[in-house]
Image (cartoon, rainbow, N blue to C red):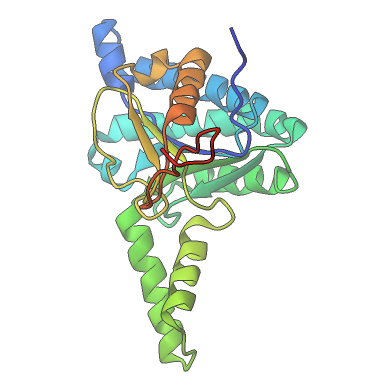
Length: 247
């Protein structure tokens, strides 16, 4: 099989289906989240190996606070475990970790782990791994717009293009626009994830539950992406015949 290259791509994944996968196996939901952590480790490594430039994983949305408290505690325990196990490995592989989302509501131990991992991997020049925790795209856009208005009220006059550029930088930083957004678990919605950055993303929805999603699934998603025609509002380029006429 021909190897797949994701070189230079910005990929985002909504990791959905942990709980349903566990239920189908007759297991508690915690087992699904644990299996989902294993899937995340495999996909991060494989994405790095095939040259993906940036990978954003939707780990915990702001709406997920509505889940049972015991489940929320378990998710944060697994997050801390992931940071403990993977930080040094990410550093050795040249990965750079960035956590996006609100931090003011996170448990102190989780926040300390995030800050340490970001510091340890800050010099990485390989894959840029972003993990969305307590994240809401609407909230992020509102915060960025509020900051822009605050700057304007202090006398910093911005043109429309400057405002747009500042918003993009505040929301996406160096990651830029998403090329490919994947959602596992069978649902077909964005769930308040990277709405601004995914304006022109190619969307791929799969029935595979996140714990089942493996390297071959990521390869297949990238292969499909590479066969799609991205026009960004334009029209396809005309096909020119040997005689020089457009067809």
